[in-house]
Image (cartoon, rainbow, N blue to C red; front, side, top):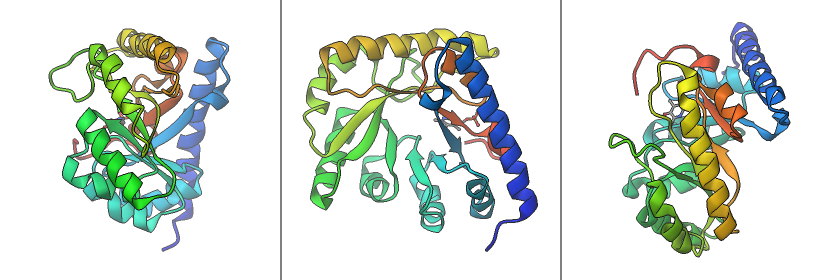
Length: 237
Ligand SMILES: *Cc1c(COP(=O)(O)O)cnc(C)c1O
């Protein structure tokens, strides 16, 4: 099905607005906006709408559920797809098959499984990020910051994975500015870890619709933006 021109126009405008805000935030701290990748978080957005979004230039998409994402990815294989939600071990094979980047690796066990499966399939190592629970929020998944030093000694030996960096989901904040300390913590953690583990990549996936400009000011290289591109979600996920 061909996307509707009016949908493409709407997404193009939303995309340009978000890119403009990324550029302004980068300029405030003398960063190159080209070093920030925008992932459009498309959970709950149906495939027909996503066709329009991709036609409008939103070509990197993020989904939080493997099951929901598979038919969208099959329908839009030209986009780059990132998994940003918790991954159950029994869906690891599907995740490898469908996603270009798995941002939500949150345990050594999951990483070992992904690496093993990826090596069996062959080809290039699976691109992953390690999800970090920066604020030690009991409601959130991710490595605790204090556990990463030891975990990395094992994770960086896994030949089926390419560990490109760290990702965090900030705690809910009323004001975007309140998210800043979380972003600063993730950046400093990355710097400290990379000094001891040169194999760890420097990507920092942090910032969502409400706080991505603050994240860019604090060094984010990947922002995950849903509502500011696609509008409010009717379903809470
Ligand atoms: C939903 C989601 C986002 C995007 O949130 P918005 O507020 O819509 O920008 C980013 N990251 C993760 C992990 C998400 O689940």
